[in-house]
Amino acid sequence: MPQPQYYSGLIVKVAAERDKSAFVELFDYFAPRLKGFLMKQGADDAAAEEIAQDVMVTLWRKAELFDPEKSSASTWLYRIARNRRIDRLRRQKTAELDPDDPSLQPTPLPDVADEMDARLREKRVRAALEKLPDEQKEVVRLAFFSGKSHSEIADDTGLPLGTVKSRIRLAFGRLRQLIESDEAVDVG
Image 1: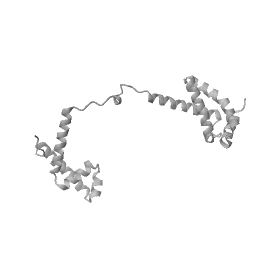
Image 2: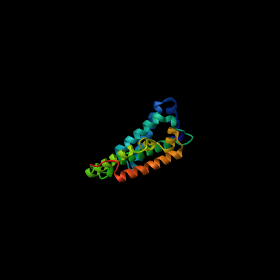
Image 3: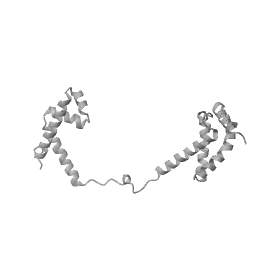
Image 4: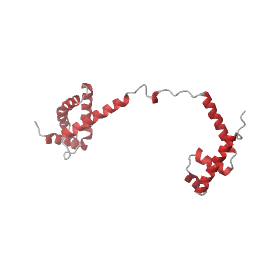
């Protein structure tokens, strides 16, 4: 039986010269051993065969990544096989869907009464917004419809940050009054 360094040398030849005879020798020696190892780890015959083939293809394509100073040929190849098996198990687990998973259930239809309440609220808010002074209306629109922070509004408008915050606070107070008193919208 050849020494471990022998197989490491074969991988180096595959990396440096794309040596097909070195690859065939590596394949003949390691493919059945990798398959046996994978089957002992719980893979079925077909999966073990497929993973072993994949490891050998990886050896051919990425032999230059092998460093004989860091590990032996067998350590490198068995590590690749182990990682491929783990990746395969993870994919299988994520592929199994639980039919009772709430995220897979259809979204319930909205309650008509809730929808009407939401529309009425929106109508009241829009009407109340129109009754705000222009300077308050501007900062509210920038904050809530454009999604800007108080600092961004201050930069965009040239207003001091404190003024932006005050205007938003005053606008909220005024909106609350208008909506609560129902003077913003003529309901009817």
